[in-house]
Image (tube, rainbow, N blue to C red; front, side):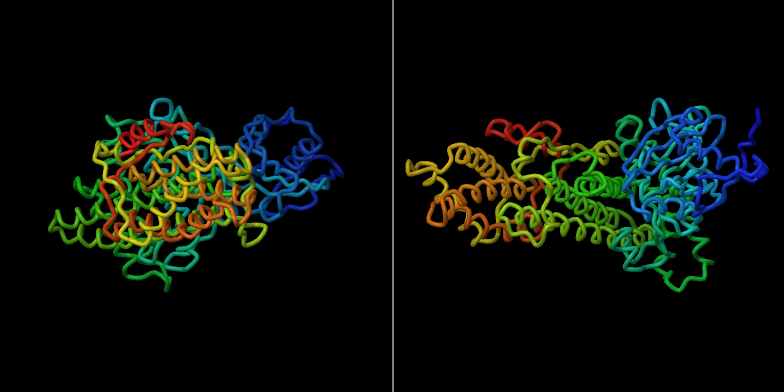
Length: 563
């Protein structure tokens, strides 16, 4: 039996079988010798005895070659060449960064199959009990992310499944560059629009770690351990930004501004010994990043295909994330007013720009989702691609999930029990609601022809929930419930025609959609005098399985728990 050296692909002999001809027709990235080509050939023929199945994702299935430290990723039929080669392209750029998956080769076989062969990273998903983050390995992992920054590679999917903790050593490894992107230091429209870094910040892989892996880990830690862990984490974050400051200071890049460097320097200085107020700012920032990730996962095509989430959840999820961004802004104000330290004040002023960036992004996303649903509810699509896959009715009974309350876990702050009813400053909108309720009351009492009793009953139940939300000041859920009411009214009107009372209700709801959505966005942003204590507080939707349980009694319970 030939014994393979598994530490370095170059140590394999290229002397294999005389006149060996492989089914590998193209090596698109990296290098592969004849011995591994032979392994790929047998794998391609369906012989899986030399490989152990590890798992699968949207694009591919992954196996480990037995007795080696290499894995082979087989891409699914129908995956585009660009998608199948993207990871290899980025791994080729990454090179030999310690702690990261490394490329051997990406190949095509005569059967038309695409394969990626790369190093195997040992480990399990991080868990405070089974596979905890130890601080020395976590520091090393941050150095891995720092090296990726220098390579100008943004991993873009640093979730818990891609950060592997070795149970024996605690070392953290990084895998799966399928969604990785190029990034350039300094401000570009690409960095701002696609990587979500405003002009005063330099793109950083650590932000994706804070968005996708750190929040669920902190949630599992619980309130007894999370505060101390987060303070120590901020010190490691300080070192990360210190390294970046000195690197970018000497980097010949005209896009890097003095403000970019100041931000890195101030982070390294202030986070070394963060005050309580500063800690609260970065705990709230973590909540914003986590809430955005939750909202985006609902509408992201890559997750929708696998999980089929409740798309209507996107509206309250984005509104909630925007409310967290408003809270982040408020915490920054508190931090500025609580200190005379110049470095802290200057850092917080830069963070204020970041807060405004996220508030604008999340508010516009919430508005965009609301408008998208109205177009579907009223059958006014901008094109075939504008339509989501199921009817709106499909989502009525699907559960909502909430973003974890990371901020409370870190700081111990509890949501208050105070409830304020939403008051719209727009008197025209208030009059519109009065007219709507009068129309609906008259419609529900009428014994005149009802086109479909089932449709009529559904409209009544959905409209009751909608009215409860308005009367209770339920700001964040209101746009989604408005969409359901609009859709039910639209279906009744389509049965009865434009002379029916249902048409008047539909027309009134349709007319109110845009001003309602903007009023709610203003409430979240604190404009127009309608921002309540309630809107600032964290909420949970886990307590309810579906809309049908939002009766009057349950809704009151919901409000108390929500805020």
